[in-house]
Length: 217
Image (cartoon, rainbow, N blue to C red; front, side):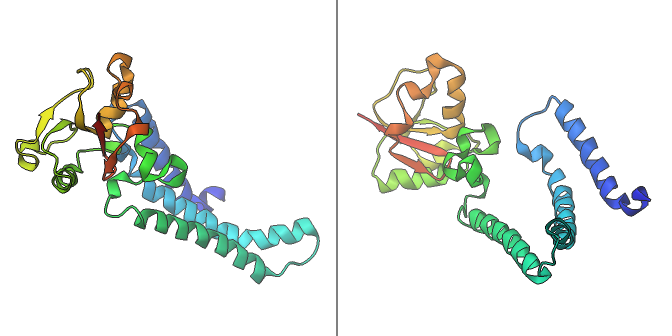
């Protein structure tokens, strides 16, 4: 009976379990994009349970309290709570536009700090090179030390205005820009950690959400 009544949910759970098992055992671990296929199915299950809870909640409260509760008020409060969560989610997503790739929810630190929890294409894929070029032009910067994580040609955006650096090179003076990927990843080698001479407390600007800019005196 349970199998017949809950066949759809059990089938979705089986698919999710199989996908998670394969993903966890895989040696390929280069981004959250590999588990994105589980999200729609998870949303379907969560929505189904929320709907079921909306039906069960008034009955459960009546039973536990021993007196009749106004079903309409109970459901109104429930839907207001769920609606508030959905509104929060929508506002959280919209406020990061047009930097969709940098989105992190507030519990993860938001787009401003989410990059400190992950590396690689989870937050940074060189998407802010064009914005960095505009920053350089607007601030009349003649020379920039740059450690850029991405596939764009820096010579196209910053012709004659940049020099390549890496985390293990000696500190530079003047303007320095480092992709969050390389900044975060440098901590794996203390002798090369960018934080030794580019602490976040001295951050001059953040271009987009993936390029850290410092001015070293």
